[in-house]
Length: 270
Image 1 (cartoon, rainbow, N blue to C red):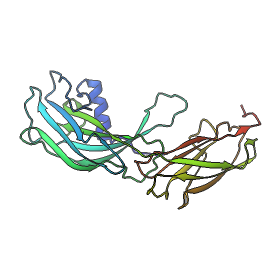
Image 2 (cartoon, one colour):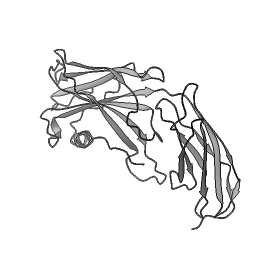
Image 3 (cartoon, rainbow, N blue to C red):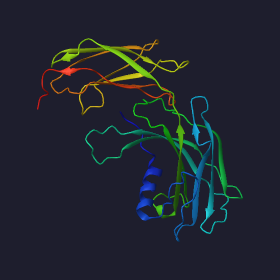
Image 4 (tube, rainbow, N blue to C red):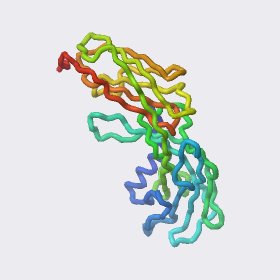
């Protein structure tokens, strides 16, 4: 499932700054790390409140820019982003980035005479319309400043981040299967219903059926207006894992997961 990467201008810079030792530590609690002697600035960022929920989705993003000696740094433009993160599906344990990123620009506030900046009333939410399968419910807020605006000189870049806990409502999925014992060549049909919290419409909720451990899913569908779904798959010689997963369209509604009581009577092909 394709997703955007953290923008090159931030991801590349952050990686280079970490390698160079010039990147300030993340300010999850808005407390600056001890600056290195070469740091010209220290950047922090935080939110109020620290968490959101279904009925309360907005925060004020605030932060500070100070000089290395602790004095305020005014007139500094700071790039602020919300980053919704997704867990990489990786059953093989390969050393790959365990996270996908979907960033959204929130603005570029300028620090005031006291070195403070604010982006008020930020909507902490998933805005892109992509699937929420495997979404993480801690949303990242990042702050970045590059002195000369040239990302090829990362030694003058400064980065901080914090997370906002997007507290979710639960959902569930019920199902029926046309057979509980299958062999290669059989048609497995799963029908069921996704139940969401009261007042949440099910339209657009995705349902995924996995049949093989190496694949995230083999077939998927979208529920009807009443939450019901049906899907079928032809069982292959490789299939050995039968599981349902759901992905509601709202960041504040958690998906559901169910292992199906399916027994494979023929052995997977080697």
